[in-house]
Length: 113
Length: 116
Image 1 (cartoon, chains in turn red, purple):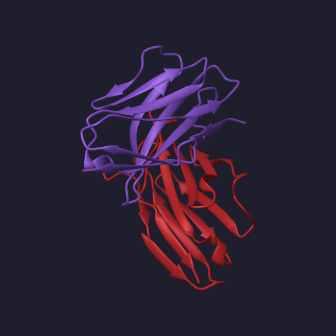
Image 2: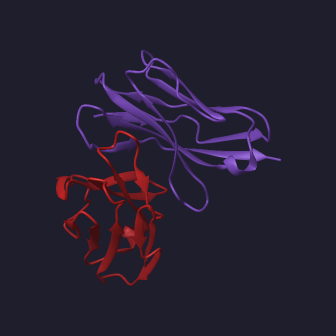
């Protein structure tokens, strides 16, 4: 298994631009999570899905952030418009109900200038 | 809401020695899972060890073991025979067992340095 695949690995964009982060979970996993990691706030859960359905999006900071999971093998996190304070590492993780831990992707380092 | 606290921002250990990283958590639930994750400079989050709250026996994975004290809500990680490759940020995490597929709540992390 290739694990959780995230793309791109690095993204540099200008303020005001739209950014789309992508994630392919492990086949057979039914839960998918988007986390954001910063020095100031640590690891924060943004949103998670069970069986492609958003369960809790209370961590999404603003309406500028949106996430979709159109099928079991793909999810996106979109920021529109992006701002410098969105600069962070964004992780996607998947699990089978979470009982055996979550498998994380390699993360996307986003820099908004 | 559950909280996870790691009171040691930084720790260091000599190669081949043993080090213990501390973690406490706050919850009113009786069914839950606890995890330790390792994040090396590559930034990959790697699962080190997990513990089910209903199990009294402490989990062990090779050189890594935990001391799970349910009444005290404490979950420390012991690394024996430390190796240079163990240098990383270590995160303690909590997951409710009462809701399937629920979130992981992370502590602030402990940066471990291994000195040769």
